Length: 287
Ligand code: GLN
Image (cartoon, rainbow, N blue to C red; front, side, top):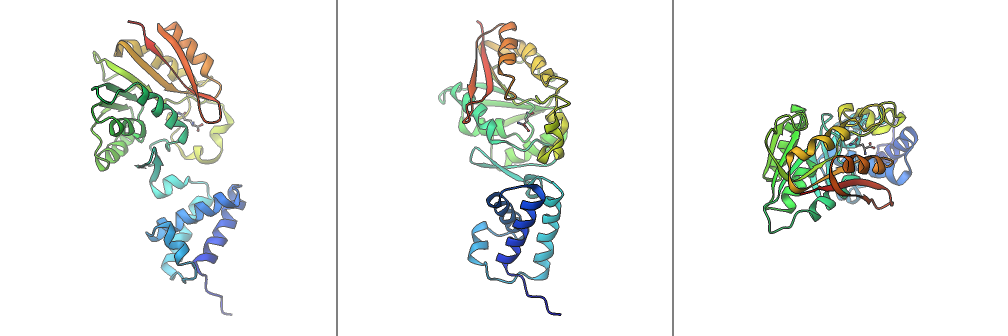
């Protein structure tokens, strides 16, 4: 029996159907994923796939694509398969040691940039930098800033340092369990996207997050364990008038503002994301 040869288009159609059915994605999203995987497997630009849709991939190409597709169908996040994720217009290296950068975190970056005049050498600390997406973006958007980034995971720091050197971002990377390696150091601005999901949240057992480091996601029974610690310890590492900005869960804004207020931050504020949900809060340390 002769099997009809698969074209690039039919291979992608087939993968789209399987991704959609297995992962419960809409066709548009499933097609996008199929294209990203094929482009990565074959080392071509996604546009190449459209221009070559009637080409017949050779067996080696079919196998390379099939291996990645099988991993995706088993639930592995696309970003871990390709090792990259876009954030704020730049490509960041990712590995299972780091949280995959989310578009949500661009709100934190925007709020931080509003605190960083571009003609001043603002000192900034990024706590739990993970992929480095916040620290590296801030350093590149504000070339005069002095950005320090810490993480307790050496593997995460290796990933962030790698991206930092590829993008030529002047960031000081340090291994530190929150502030542990920063005794006596003070900054104008401290930012962080700490873990903030409640340990028992069923969200942790679904989709991409199952493959991400739990230490970057879960924080105690109410998800606030790390935020509580960071907010309490931040004043010792802020200059007078310095600011703290943190990302948090969709239902934590009130609790975070209360923690900021109780710790001596004046005018705690929260900012909504594009869907109107407050996901970033912060305050200024009273002088
Ligand atoms: N926003 C992420 C999620 O919901 C969690 C990120 C974090 O805990 N810092 O999956």
